[in-house]
Image (cartoon, rainbow, N blue to C red):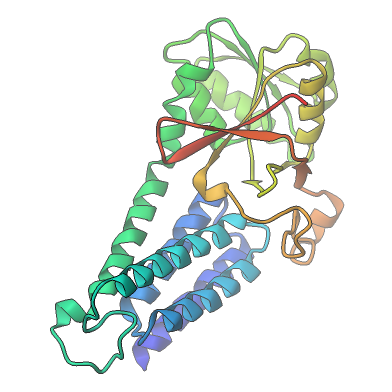
Length: 314
């Protein structure tokens, strides 16, 4: 009973952390979600796979409700549910074994056989966590392939993935970066400072100057909050304007995202919130996220842990 209480308290603590925004960013939220789900699978007993799936769904709904804007939470819950379903399906093809998800919990059998299905699920979740630990590295290593010498790269706002991507490419390429300040958060100032400290020639411009500077740019390189099922991108406010300017000048528009940001939701789904107005009043006045319509094609990289979304010209 105390064990269940400890897990419930941990879940409530996790939801409180999400609500208070004590964890920022899609990647830390995704890791935190997987840590909670792994703890539930490890410490709680479930007689069938269906019971475990119901438990994960309930927990995932609570965490996603605590932070509805962060789609990576729901994405990780869906990945774990897929792992459980695949394991249960595999056991259905095998001969009946004691302790499998499809067997009663009170069936006699060795402990190793009784927990075999659970161990497989835990191992898959550990692999997923390890994938998230290396996902930014797999993206940044491709910087040299996408950026060429003496190019002018335009970006907007602050994105850790974009910063690491440009920093890695600067080790073997000489190029310039033009950073739009990204109102209303103005985190482009931080991006420009970090790029300059990394030894990259950087120019900071106002958002209103993006269209004028686009004619000099060779490529637009940005991060995103999520990629939707129809190819649309949920990105900071103002990137839609940048995408339209890039299309007008026939400039490649590249969006760097990890697999944890690929969402099965469509822009019309009612559970998709671009900004959490019900949680933070200032976001109702200054929205942080907007949508770029369906204009993406995906490029499969050599590394399976990463995808690059490149917006194609219509």
